[in-house]
Length: 82
Image 1 (cartoon, rainbow, N blue to C red):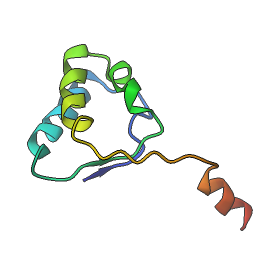
Image 2 (spheres, rainbow, N blue to C red; image 1 turned 120 degrees about the vertical axis):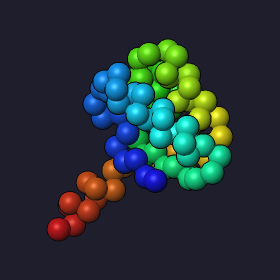
Image 3 (spheres, one colour; image 1 turned 180 degrees about the vertical axis):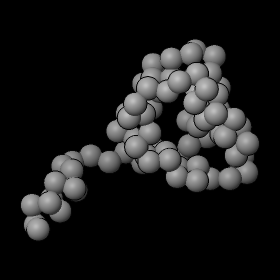
Image 4 (cartoon, one colour; image 1 turned 30 degrees about the vertical axis):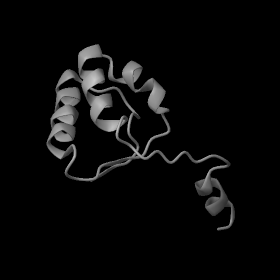
């Protein structure tokens, strides 16, 4: 499963619980990719509820392979060549 543009807007309590349930169901058995401009160090702040944030981060970050990209936006480059 791929979740693109993670953390673009605030989550409701129901949405936080839904993402936790999804991650719990997938943990250790299926791959999940999160693409985000938000640094994972700020996920607790973003998620708001400390208990849910701990649970989500335990399932998402602690067993992750992180790929951090840097440099100019590729979308800007593509737009300027058209």
